[in-house]
Image (tube, rainbow, N blue to C red; front, side, top):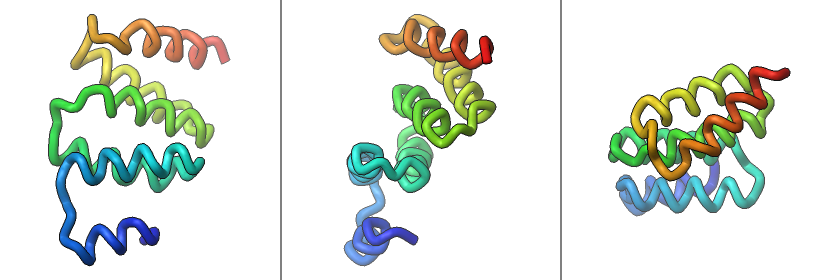
Length: 99
């Protein structure tokens, strides 16, 4: 368990925004696996936060786990086919399928 999760657990902070911001911070600190854990929990707490599905794809691509990245982008598009991140999701999917 990472240090941030220990602090959040200690203070009983288990809500969408806490995990969303923790994931954002860890992503910026180049700690994609830990960021994914927090984004995943944020999605459990708020399944309609579809943009996190797109960002999960980015994290998995960063970790060279392209099959999982592809699955996340497809999941985003299944929920938000015309969403604001749909063009970028399609672009990432095209790029992954070209490899």
